[in-house]
Amino acid sequence: MAGEGTLQAVILAGGQGTRLRPLTLERAKPVVPLLNRPFLAYQLALLRSHGVSDVVLACSYRVDDVRAALGDAEHLGVRLRYVVEREPLGTGGGVRNASDLVSGTLFVMNGDILTDADLSAMRRLHEARASRTTIFLQPVPDPRQYGLVETDESGRLHGFREKPTADEEIGTNTINAGIYLIDGPLLGRIPREQASSIEREFFPALIADGIPCFGWCPTAYWRDIGTLSAYRAVQLDLLHGRVRMPLAPLGERVAGSWIAGGGAVAAEAQIVAPSVVGAGVALGPRCRVGPGAVVGDGSTIGPDARVEGAILWERVEVGAGAVLQDCVIGADVKIGAHARVGPEVVLESGAVVPERATLTR
Ligand code: GDD
Ligand code: MG
Image 1 (cartoon, rainbow, N blue to C red):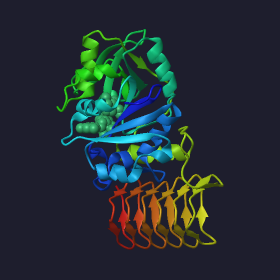
Image 2 (cartoon, rainbow, N blue to C red; image 1 turned 135 degrees about the horizontal axis):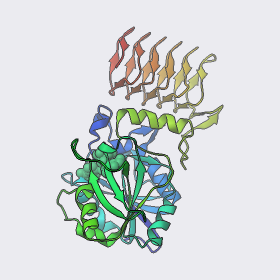
Image 3 (cartoon, rainbow, N blue to C red; image 1 turned 135 degrees about the vertical axis):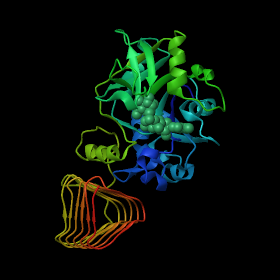
Image 4 (cartoon, rainbow, N blue to C red; image 1 turned 180 degrees about the vertical axis):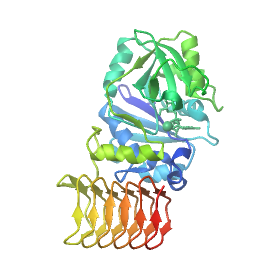
């Protein structure tokens, strides 16, 4: 139980991250790196900036990764606790499993949403409308892979349809953005220790029972990072300042890039902004990193190599004259000299690319 005035949140972080494979074979989705920081650090910083200081992570898959990356999150100004499902309980059962640690009105959020939305304004709306559950909504061009939400002109919810099938009629392009404010006692409606879906069961039942629930549709940056193309795209958005996050990349700001230092930069190596260069990175003579490059801690970029629009995890070795363009490279990958790795290629951790090989998608 939190003290009075303490705002709480439950983050759903127990999915397998199937759509982010092979990256999530190696690391749990909630802590895949974004600009060299674990993803959840951004969510925690956002929550913190809106007065949430007590967060419960509902986990089931690769919990050790999450603990290793975040610990108790003291450095981010929040208290972070973990509840672990023995078997995945879905988005409903996952929240229910965390419900003994929370009370009052709380935020519940999917652990794969990057947004800079003003969550304090969401709270004000929740209170002003005497809403019992408020759902953050976003318009999207293709809503089928999301939860579709219908509201009346006052913003009150009157329909929630999770991922409609191809032949179902779609009357809206407004989707569930995966962040909710829920009055704690309502969580008692979710069965304990039983798999269920907050989207397919809990929300439709609230609406059917006439409980006042509202949508909140801000103008804000919003993206689900859970697909490979989104994973790279959100990092470019962060680099280009298209998301206003309370958490900057680690390192010193130098000519529009962030450089963590502790490595070796050859005299004619170039870092083209905006880029992020992690700690202990060695940049060889005449290599060019950026624009739009993220180089993980302990990586080595060989002489004359080029890294552009590419995300490199930790300890990647890039051989002399190799070219990496718009791709994602897992940890400890070795790229042979003069190899080329092209747009949208994703290499799993530990992969080895032979000299002069060309990889495309
Ligand atoms: N604890 C726990 N247990 N968490 C889970 C489980 C589980 O069994 N299954 C999934 N989660 C977590 C995931 O880790 C993720 O953070 C969140 O729940 C949502 O799961 P996704 O698998 O990412 O769902 P989605 O992206 O297809 O759809 C959801 O998000 C959309 C917005 O991006 C739904 O909430 C949609 O309605 C929504 O539009
Ligand atoms: Mg998702």
